[in-house]
Each structure stands twice: as C-alpha cells, then as structure tokens.
Length: 58
Image 1 (cartoon, rainbow, N blue to C red):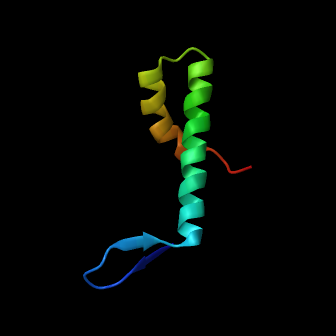
Image 2 (image 1 turned 90 degrees about the horizontal axis):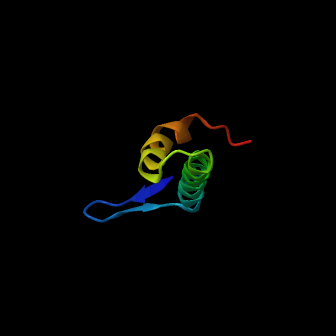
C-alpha cells in the first residue's frame, strides 16, 4: 500500500491510492446522508469520521 526508501518520502502505491479513495468516498457518502436526514453539517462531519469505518463496501 506504501513505498518508502531511507531518507525519502513515503508514497502510496496504486492499490494504496485506490484504498484511500474508497475511504474518502465512504466518508462523503456518510456525511452527505447525515446532512440529508437533518444533522447539521459540523456534527455530520464529526460523526462521519467514526461511522465511515463501519460501513461495508457493498
């Protein structure tokens, strides 16, 4: 998922970038859903931080 070399930056592999994108997408979906059901944006953002880890990829 990552590539590193001594004294250099750490980079995501293609697989790592794909995983990061899926995580970001899940976060956005959860946040947007919470806003749609009436949760204020600030609370929805905070709640999505925890809930996104419990949403299946299906």
